[in-house]
Length: 80
Image 1 (cartoon, rainbow, N blue to C red):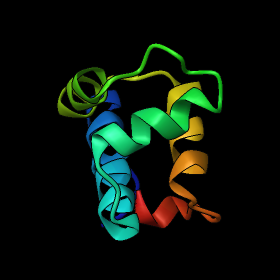
Image 2 (image 1 turned 30 degrees about the vertical axis):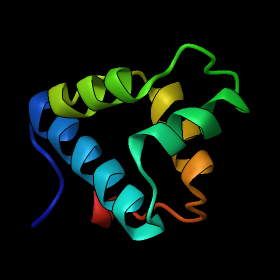
Image 3 (image 1 turned 180 degrees about the horizontal axis):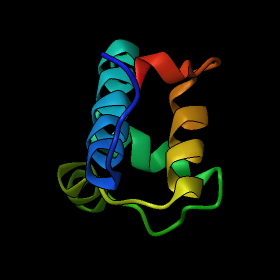
């Protein structure tokens, strides 16, 4: 598959990766929103998370905090 070649492709892959990690962990967007509150993301809701993942546009701090909140310990670039 190789690495993404455009910004849009990176965004799409990052979004798919977060969705896959959520599914693997058996978490809903509501549960992720609650977990994100513990990491300083007080305003996240089910809807705001769904919108971010649907658009594929979210800041790096959100991406990293979501992975921590989900419980992902390793992120392999080949998987994104």
